[in-house]
Length: 452
Figure 1: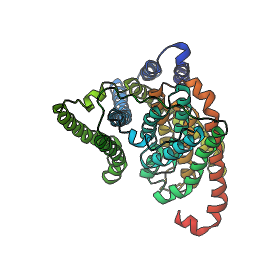
Figure 2: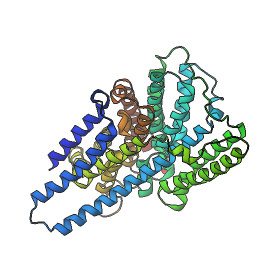
Figure 3: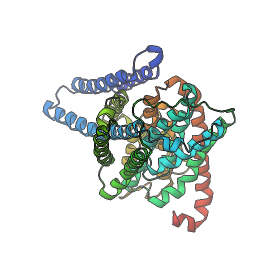
Figure 4: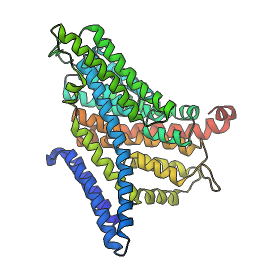
């Protein structure tokens, strides 16, 4: 069964990667893959254990399907809410408030500005939401599609690097933070510099090759010219709503998608009122209803398919077995656990990092008789860095990458050729910096270790 499931996953993954040569949309492949894996999982177990209590088995499958569908739905509705808010801001020409301030057309300067902005915004919001916002900005700044792809690829790297060092910047860091494996000050102190290096190294490499100026797209104000005060209102309300999400989660301990849907509801009501007001004056402004008509639904369904596929591998015990194999191969002492984290980071570019981190959290309890990695152990801090940034190695290896891929229709192979090596260079450079700091600085300066 294990061989069959892994084979199906690899074939499906290959078809997703070859979307453009095969001329088959990746969303269709992902939906088929998720369904097929669960179907094969059920039938293989029925054949292997014919005497099994069918009612108990069906109850087991239903329980895990509902549980994993719930986890997947949280991400899907989060993405739906974020994309709707960002598109509403775009429909109200709100991003002009920002793009009008970015006056440079120099390719190298623009790369640094966008990368730094993405890095810190990702720590404040989260990497997926930030990537969606930044792609919307890129469309206002860069006309040429291939040039925009390059900057979008760098946005993915910067968003994932920025999310790794913040307790609310990436879903895996959030998991470790809520689970008690890391504390707020500790994760920031220990991973900020490594994450910054992970972002800076690719920017330096790409910046050395960029020359000249970018061509900005012509301003297209199809429809109503939105008054400046309304642009600012919707922009600040939209960004404020996105910033509200991690605050909502911290205060209420409820899932982030609820905060996102609440923020969308507030903006929805506001735009309905604005639309009615200006309709009376001969204008028709967008509302959330009109915005939802051109939301990128295939990207949302792609998330649904690929995450359900990965959840099947988790329920089948394949991911836990993989984690156990890494543990047996490298051990739990330094430098062994560094290699475990590095491999998990690389694997997270192929398999969703959430179940990988969840498996690691299950393998290494922070309390009990046998505790390998206690709270704020370097294993957890390095795991946050690796799982957060390793997904950049492939475009479908992170939520930010999938969101950008869907919005800009970036080709998997193009990303593999143009961005993956840059991501690997940043990933390794940041990892070396983390290890060097942990072995020297933090282990020998007791007051700094106590602060962390």
